[in-house]
Amino acid sequence: MSWELADVGISGEIIENLQIYLDLLKKWNARINLVSEKSLKDAWTRHFKDSAQLWEHSGDGGKWLDMGSGAGFPGMVLAIINHGEGNRYRFCLVESDARKCAFLRTVSRETKINTEIITIRIENLPFQKADVISARALASLTDLLSYAKPHLKNGGFALYLKGQKCGEEVEKAKKMWYFRSRLFPSSIDSNAFVAKIWDLKRAI
Image (cartoon, rainbow, N blue to C red):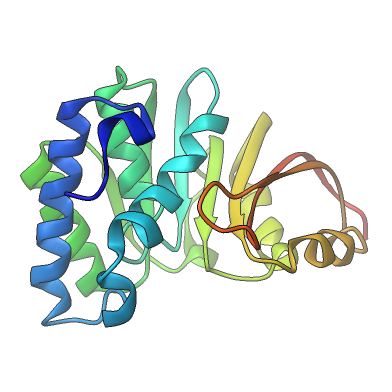
């Protein structure tokens, strides 16, 4: 295992559940396209550690909504960490692909993580009243804010894993939205960022 406990500062139980997750990812990826074969070779860093860094920016608890969950990054990784850290949040993962949802439900069952998984397009999702919303590799920041606004509670915030053009995306999003933001350098990619967004209001 290449993910040392001291490297991420999380418990052995969490690591064991993430290992179960990784084994299932490799097994299912041979049947359906969950992640690229290239990224699968370095999944601990490319997918698991990348997702896990959002936990550093989590709050006091409530409902956590992960949009466009795909193979579960970042939502399922964070749900596993949340379980090991005392279940501060109730996790809901939204994904339109039924096959990927079947995979996520298998991970949830095998790790014994109580996670709600909804098979639906984001545009059709009933209001969720989330305290935190997350997404990775889903859409531009402008579109992500449009997806988030109906589901984000007052006082809530969004966390997005974004690439090197994150700053440009923030400036472009400000043409349509009022919001406060802070960009944190990614812990695994010097060209990437974690974008935290709050006080979101439509500008036009």
